[in-house]
Amino acid sequence: MRRALLSAVALATVGLAGPSASATTVPGTTAAANYVVRYTFDGHTPLADVTGHGHDLSPVARYGGAFNLVAHAGGSALTFPRPCQIEPCPRIALRTVTSDELNPGPRNIRFGASVQLAPNETTKGENVLQKGYSARGSQYKLQIDGAAGRPSCVLVDDLSPEINVAMGMVSVADNRWHTLECRRSGSSLTILVDGKRAGRTTIPPDLSITNWIPLSVGGKGSYTDNDQFQGTLDEVWVQIDQ
Image 1: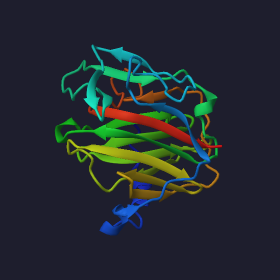
Image 2: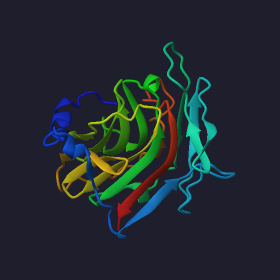
Image 3: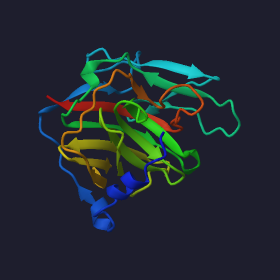
């Protein structure tokens, strides 16, 4: 994860100093948005894309990295490797075969997941889902930042290196289940926690994301600095306006 986020984070906090901002319930979008991919991690093929679009996940792992299935909400969820202080540490990410269908271009996009993270499972940065890299090309990403365990959304344009961040003002590292959603609507990027707005920033209205990098869940790869997710994950999804 790139660390040059201070200016973008400062923008994300504008107008959100008071408790009323984090308590604002944001209504859902219209039927114009459709799932392009969704993972429930249930059944005999837990890494299957249940939309039928064929974007099934495959693990890439190193140093014994693995996921485990645990019971959740009448189905299953995935647990990822716990924090490790001495390298080499277990690493794993789940990836699709790259597809243009997962690129929003300039269109509105929503993406999210349900997460459970304990206070002792936070690190400097954990990726829940992402497509693309901020260091080159374009990106959309949902992550959980720092020891405080604050979620954030990231968008990076195809032609601009600016990292646009909507930082959540609440922690989700309390060992409870939380739903997280990133929502791009025109020139606004919002992070929602349990259906309520937790942070927001303004983005260029013509921001566009098109890259050939696979969608990745739980980390950006299996290498050392992969921003490994360390908790439990369920209900991962992406919707893109038609």
